[in-house]
Image (cartoon, rainbow, N blue to C red; front, side):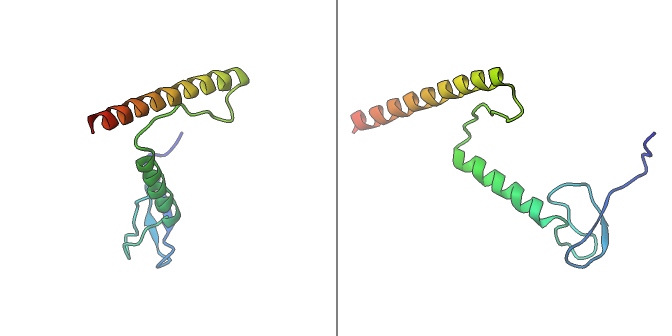
Length: 100
């Protein structure tokens, strides 16, 4: 049975002191205030920036562990999504050109 009083700790890369760690990218050292996991924090910021660049378009994700049939149907759905986005983009462009 797991003990509910167990806590996670991590050694701060800046001051080398141990701090409580909630295993979040933004967790900071209790002693110096530096990030406990700067690499994970950078990855989280990079992922957020990538989402921002994609414009919020949510395409179906095709995972490597999916079966062949699942990957086939996900590829078809993703292709349909891309065609739909292309058609909408063309319509917006056409309306913009016609409007002057």
